[in-house]
Amino acid sequence: MEYLDIYDENGNYIGKETRENVHKNALWHKTVHCWLYDKDGNVYFQIRADVNKLYTTASGHIKAGESVRQGFAREIKEEIGINVNYEKAELVNVYTFTMDKPKSDGSMFRDRAFSNVYVCEYNGEGNDFNFDPNEVTGLVKVNAQDTLDLITGKKKTIISSVYKNINNSVEKYDKLDLSLDNFLVNKGETAIKKYGDILTKVIDLTK
Picture 1 (cartoon, helix red, strand yellow):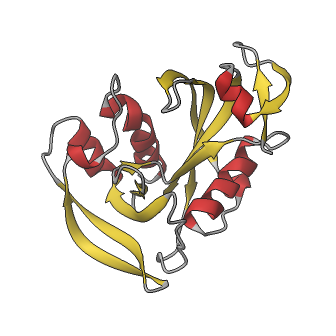
Picture 2: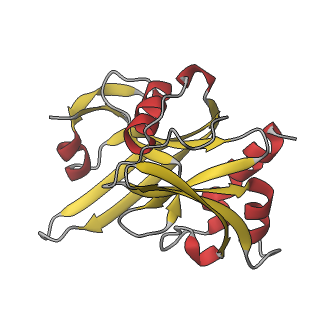
């Protein structure tokens, strides 16, 4: 059974609870949004298996007793299949996230999260990626400045590279055109609010 550390609305630790009860009772907890980037100013978006849209490089809950940076490394390993030095992960920002969504059984999924957004430099060639097919169907590498121009309306499409598992190995496809519709943006959100800070951070780190 998975346990999460829980907090009051001001972020003060108050104990731990099962993941099921955390979302049943709208308890505050921590999540991590993990982003990889390279020295050339590119950032990696995962292709989410459930919606076939581009999202974080990896993301998930912080487990009880786990630091956010440790959670960063674990989520990257679980979803992307590579090891990263979590000590080198840098904080972008911490956001509060709330959502109430009805489930198929008629109950409510209640989310109250402190979402910790971190970045970490990756200098590999992509041949070490190994995606969890239940979560991720591949990674898309895009230039951070081009992507920022896309979500602010300065560009209509941008060029990307795609990494996918094919026959137990990673294959790379160049020059895939992307539009804003390819990116995951939930109802009530905007692309600039969802991705603007991370893209700006990568641009600043790689100037």
